[in-house]
Length: 452
Image (cartoon, rainbow, N blue to C red):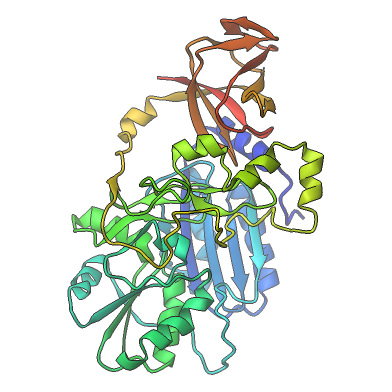
C-alpha cells in the first residue's frame, strides 16, 4: 500500500510534460473535529494518488488545509472524494486565476497539531464560532464605512507585494504573532468599530474572527474565500478592486496578479518589483523580492556571501551547511541585513510602477514547447550550460526554454552554440550542446524548443 511519494520532482515534471494535460491549481480548508487524523491522512493519500493529485496538505484534529493541483479531467472525481465526508459537502474550492502545471511536484499530506498554528492553549476557545462572511461587493461597501478597521492577517512577505488599501499590515513572520499584536492595538474598539479581516484563502481569518469574538469584539467580519475568491468575484461582477498589487501564493508561482500596480521594491536595488524568489544557496533559501537584473547579476542569490558559496564545489557546500537544516525551508521568513530595500511594516497604498500585461491566453496557446534534452553541467565562472540532446534537433537562432523546479521558466534565443566542443550551427540527438546561460542551471532542468 503506497502512502508516500516514490518519484523525484524532476521526474514528475517530465511526466506532466508527457501527459500534455491542463492542470488546475486550487485550495480549500475546513474546520471540523477529526477523531483520527492519521487514518484520515492515509485515506486521502490512497484516494488522491491515483487521480494524480499533487500538493501540500495539512490535517489535524481541528480540520484540513489544502493547496494542490490536479489534471482538469480529474476535477469531478476529486470532488467526489472530498464530498464523501459530511463536513466537506458543498465546500468552496478556490481555483487559481493563473495556472501553472508545475505549481506542485509531489503529494505531501502531513498530520499536524493544528492546521493553522495559533499559539493558543485555551480549551474554551471555539474555532467554529466565526465572524460574518462577506462577499466582494459587501466587503467593498464596508471598507467605505469610516467606522471600519481592516486587518491583514498574513505575514510581512505576503502583504508587502499586495494588500487592501488602508489595511493594518502587521510586521510579523507568523500568524500566531499577529493575534496578540492586533488584540492590543484594537483593545479600545471592541464595542464600536467594525473589525474587517482578510487573508489569502480565508483559513487564517476564519480562526482570527473566532478568536476576536472570543475576546469580546462585537462586530467581526471576514472576507469570504479570502483574496483568491475576492479576485474572482470582482472580475466576474465588474467591481472595483480595493486590493492593490499581487496576492502571494504558497506554490511554485509565488504570486497571482490582482491589479497591475507594483507596490514593492527589489530588495537589492530598490527598483519597483513584486517577484519573489528563494535564494538558491541550499544553506539559506531566504525568500525575498528580486528583479530580473539582480537575478542575473546575483545568480538568484540574496547576498554576495551566498553567491560565493554556490560557486564552491558541491562537497564544500554540503560541509558548510552541515547541521544548519535549512535546505527544505522553501518559505523561510527571516530577514537579512544584506537586503537594503526591505520595507516590512512601512507599506504604501501608492503604486510605484505598472506591471506589463500578460499575453492573451490565445496568444500563449499558440506557443508550443518541444522537449529537446536535459542539463548535464553548469560552468559557473564561464556562465555556460551543457545539455545532452535527446529528442529533437536544435539550431542557431532557435528560441528555447530552460525549465526546472528551482530555475523556473527561462527563455533565451541561441545566438552562439558549441556542439561537442566546437562552434557549430546545428545540434542533433546524442550531441553535447553548450551555450552561454546568464543564470545558474541545475541537473533537474530540461531544455525545450519553443515553436510558435
